[in-house]
Image 1: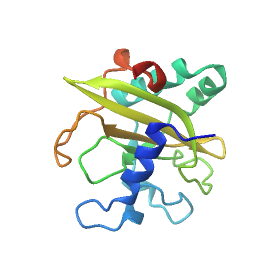
Image 2: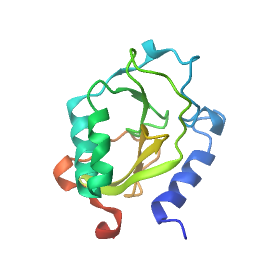
Image 3: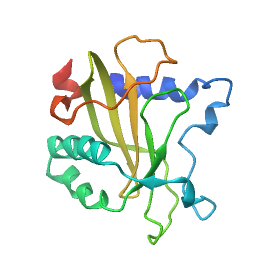
Image 4: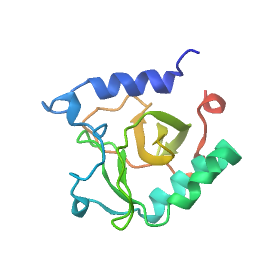
Length: 159
């Protein structure tokens, strides 16, 4: 099975060091007992709406992940200015080793006047991250926001 363009772009993006930092500092590190959950914050309403829109459009199997949104703790997953997020289980939750391994949803959406790609990741049945990447060709150091939930469509439908 061949990779989607979004999967390919995600691999390329993670392989490029951001602002002089090694590529392995991106949010692919495991979440385990060594993670300081005080560095995470609760999911914001806009972030929750974006993830929910992605899950609702993906199908019944993916909608099972909706229950994980309540109490989800996040942190910015990248230093490049993109709105990518790394997820952690709630502080009272069980910590397990999680990596960005499996794509739950592969979408696009409009953020202002530009297009943003979105990949929602999971491992071991737990959501692990939301990757956002620019599809508008903007300067890579220019920060941007997540798209509006109502503009999110499947990557295949948005081509």
